[in-house]
Image: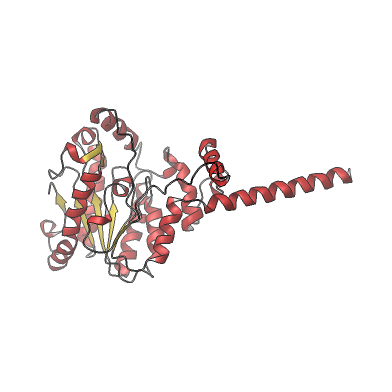
Length: 323
């Protein structure tokens, strides 16, 4: 019996050591989340910080801003992640003047675990130091939800394949898939709208509090916060709930009126963008992102200045629709 226990213990130690070594190796591989976390730690001259989900990850390109800009957005990034990232790095970002935060159709109503992107949770925990984990399996790289990505990583560790690219440019702007969408905008618009529409408003109070936290963080540092609704195609917009849209717009406009450092730019139905500017029904393509980036770059200082000088009525707040 003692021999069996001794052998079992030895095998356990070997297995545990092997797992620990593999975990260490996996965390050394190129990783978009690790890359952006390291960039924020090492660069203190950022003046514009872009937060949020895929609508800014591939919708705002820092290359076309006039001042030092970085995009720390990721697909399905939550408000609580945005608040954590901003709070973690803001004390070292002495030159930070503006923060851009997208408020999408789903932002105030859904969490990561509600959709197909829940696997991304681990990367905020592992590489940004975010303390909350909904699923304990996301505490380790080796506990991948899918065997295929894990197998590909093992091939890289073994030298059988080259490391994959991080998936974004040096300035944080997200790269686009090589294969273009084959479905029509009508089909993708309906599917996306259905996927994004909340079943209820139970999480709205929590999301509102998280947005208030972001406003508090930026106000404390005298940083201008721009809440942004990015352009959407009519094939997507026609399937959206008016009740949901009203809650979004009234909340964001209310925050813009109540807080001198907060501004709401609503370009959901903007006529500045046409079908040629979109990758799919609710995401801009590289040319559309370039157009939006130029637009916002030109607006930042003028909006902040006019908002500071005129804060007496709704018509004087920096709220833009169809611009």
